[in-house]
Image 1 (cartoon, rainbow, N blue to C red):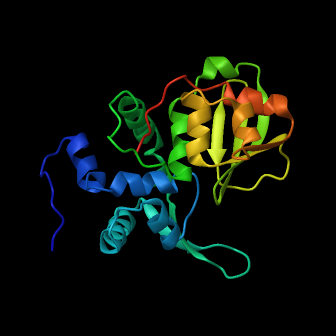
Image 2 (image 1 turned 90 degrees about the vertical axis):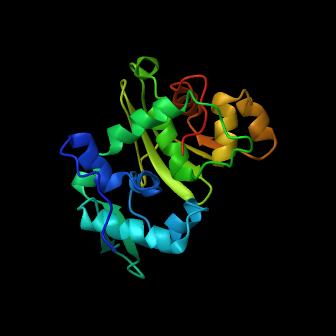
Length: 219
C-alpha cells in the first residue's frame, strides 16, 4: 500500500507527507530527549496499536528521521533514536506544545508520560526567570531519569546520565505537574512521600521557578 500524499509542492505539505500521519509526531516527541526501545515507546504511548507504532517507526526510518541502533554495555539493547534531521523537528513540536497548552483539556486527562512532561518543561520555559541561574538537576520521573541543565537563561534536558549534579528531584509526572502548574506546595508533596529532594534545595527551587504558571498537558 502506497503512502498517501498531498501531491503539493508547498514545503508545509511536503513536511506533512513525512510527519502528518496520526501518532507520528508523538513518536518523535518520545525520542526527542534520547533513544528508546520499542517496548518503551509502547508503554509511553499507551493507546497506540502495536502495528501502527511499528509502521510509524518504519516511516520515520524511511524518511531519514529515525534509525535503529544498539546501546553500548551489557545486553546491547536495540533502540530507536532520532537522526540529526529528526532532531530538527524539536522547535516545531515546542511551538505546537505552546499552542496546545492554551486549548481546553480533555474531560478525563491522562497523566503525561515522563518524556511528554520533560518536553512540556521545554515548551513553557521562561528564559527571563533563569537569568544568572546555573544548576544541574537529576530529574527522575517514574522509571525515566533526565539531566536538566540551567545555564544563565538557557535550559536543556536529555536522558544522558550526569554524575555531576547539584541536586536530585524524584517524583512522578502527575505530581510534578501539580506542583508546577496546579498549586500543590512542594512541601506537601514531600510530606506525603510523593516527591523527594536531595542535594542543593536552592538549585531545585531555581529549577521549579523558571516555568510559566499555567500548563495544559501537551500530547
